[in-house]
Image (tube, rainbow, N blue to C red; front, side, top):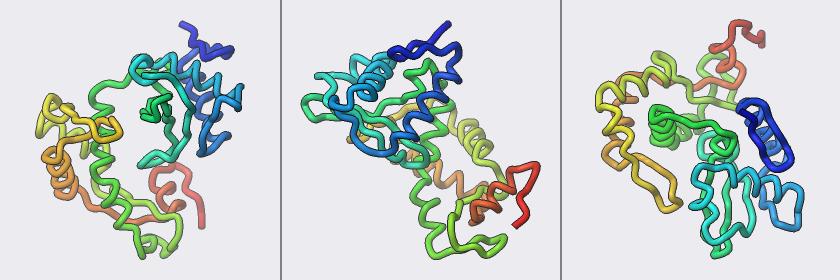
Length: 209
């Protein structure tokens, strides 16, 4: 099954995602106005592929915005003619459909993002002493395992009952958010690592500093 985005055609979801990701990173953060016809038309065609395109487009597209995502990478937003806005998944526009577990994992990351940010303030790498480009590293238990045990404890039905925040983004209820934070802190020891030490931990070919 081919994926069509405007004049572009892709044989696989992966090739479509790779193309869109590269384009977003090349453009960088900022607004995409109709006057930038080529790129604006591409993102219009991209959004039309979204499974909820009708709701996302609403009163009509005024312009698009590329902005930094809360955790990492970049995300796309459509600003409508009535000046309301909506974030939309460009991966969904490429035919990538995620299951409930994926969305629970995203909300789990969102629940602890401020704690992860704060633990790096005025710190240095616990492995080499580097003070820059720090990561909050799950040292004793992987984040994937933490999410899986959280789902086992509370059940998928309870974990996947999201509410929507003021921006319309699905998120945990306050009680479920606190449940995950407590579970996370109880089962895992965190460590601050610099970019190289963090990559080395996950690499089969560590970089020698």
